[in-house]
Image 1: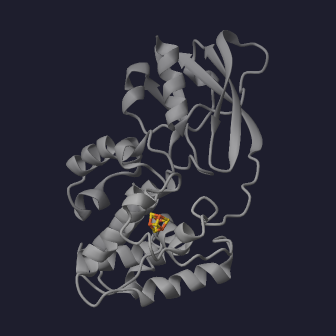
Image 2: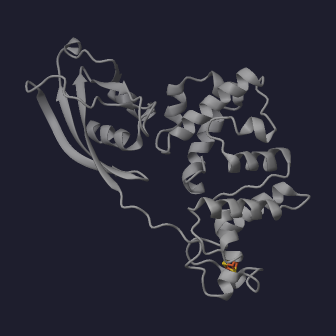
Length: 294
Ligand code: SF4
């Protein structure tokens, strides 16, 4: 949950999630719909899909016992080298390195690395450094320490160098380079995309379809096609936008009243308006639909 998301945002989602899915078995046995409904609003939904798939693999192949080797962990959906290192270090106290954004920042600043962290060569050098620095004992404390150090002291903006115990030996600090390091490639300007959502209402219910592609895969959304042509009873329309990490999505929406559900031959399900807050919907779509009920 914490990947690319702040702790304060995650806490309420985490509490509800852990309360419902108290162990791997509970999560493995849950439907994708239910898991997505608990993730709705947190974004980066591939994390929820991967977590669910991973729980099922661990239930089926490891009898619900979490694997404790790097080779097994790296095979699981959503677990890369750094996450595998974090699990091995925190849960099994094994000597493995991590390299998340915080660690990269601390290492590049302290050692004065001015090559772009987007380059494969820099990434490799940082992994080598991260491994060389590992202590022989208290690996979990060290790993938590270096992550927290980057999150609280060696922060992206305005690092607290005056209270940093390493400020006399830190190359970035000594050379006034803390703002310039880590060096990143220029961020690309976000691409604009557009779509339309058709919210068909019949007898206080709306039609939703399960999205199967893109960042909202596995979530419920209104159909993106007008299946009724020009003969529609349009109640409301409008335009909104939402921003993702790589693009901006502008969308028009149309609230359409129909009298016969059978007029729509669409592979979806009808839900009561009052069910919307509990469904696994993308946050912008959920807030749009809730605003239409008021
Ligand atoms: S001196 Fe500043 S830049 Fe260097 S490691 Fe400490 S907090 Fe980070």
